[in-house]
Amino acid sequence: MNFDVSNIRKDFPSLHQTVYGKPLVYLDNAATSQKPISVIEAISGYYSTINSNVHRGVHFLSQKATDAFEGARNHICSYLNARHSHEIIYTRGATDAINLVASSFGKKYIRKGDEVIVSALEHHANIVPWQTICNEKQAKLRVIPMNDDGELLLSEFETLMNDRTRMVAIGHISNALGIINPVKTITALAHQRGIPVMIDGAQGIVHKKVDVQELDCDFYCFSGHKFYGPMGIGVLYGKEEILNELPPYQTGGEMIKTVTFEKTTFNDLPFKFESGTPNVADVIGFDRSLSYIESIGMDQIESYEDDLLDYASRKLMMIHGLKIYGEKCRRSGVISFTLDRIHPYDAGTIIDKFGIALRTGNHCAQPVMDRLNIPGTLRASFAFYNTKEEADVLADAILKVQEMLG
Ligand SMILES: Cc1ncc(COP(=O)(O)O)c(C=O)c1O
Image (cartoon, rainbow, N blue to C red; front, top):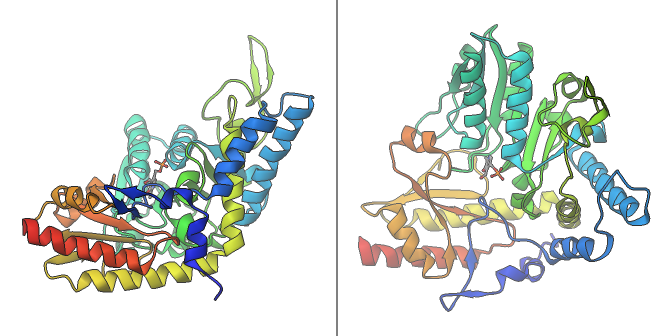
């Protein structure tokens, strides 16, 4: 294995700083990851050389920008193993992509009395857009329950599906607990009944190699900023045949073929879903982050991260009064925990003073916390640039918190 974390860390300028006089230990990667220098340079390189609007110009810069913008789409297509590059739609992020599908799919296919299935483990981004369209259409949102360990109950899922189920929308990896959901099985079970599946891959893409043809999902989405790319850019993959049938989400320039005051005809995929001037710089930045990930290799990343998570989990489990949620499940990237008699917010505030960036609260997954009957957790979320030494620093800081507040 030629994975060398100390070399990798050199590529991330933001990791090399002190916070309150202590070396930064960045463990909030599920919220957003740090960026390699090549991504930062790609963004400034775009603005300092080929900044121009895409698709519309015959001039040199516009053609250069268009080539880079469409080249990135081809790159994402091959990374995800999608069949066609027009199955890749640029969005602002995962939230935007889910809103696009919920709104557009919902407008066309969801009727009064229909049902949409989500799971008990979802981020709010994969609940609220579906809840909103269900309310609008007088349809019903149904929920795959989970057990006390955080595992989804597949037998219950099978009984939830019926002739009125129009969509199954499911997270790949839970941001709140790190649990890996059996999305391939869920997709196959839904497809047996002819029900399409949307996978929220905001956390999944970061920790797993994703092959959309192998998953056979109808939609897969994620955000660039959690995947070592810039903020404000995301991806929606959708199968061509289903995207072709959907009405546009937002309207305006770029997404049209012809416009008169009487009638507008819409553009082909992917442009039908990309109205207005796109976020060219961040598409180019994201393209570079994908190249960076490929240069290391997702297999290497996955095995390093699994080993690191295992080490950190064991270390934290040795701390008396610390409880890890989802501990018995297959997890990736995340340790979500509470400390006896100490509120997560109080603990997080003190841990911050040790230079450690953690997240506290419900992690935009309030129903998960309600199900576990807790107000929130402390969440340490790891990336491939984190180290075992950083896990040790976290464990020491937790012991100090217990001394101070316990
Ligand atoms: C599982 C999951 N889905 C969706 C989102 C929303 O992502 P964004 O805020 O980048 O749109 C997040 C962000 O934390 C997430 O973790």
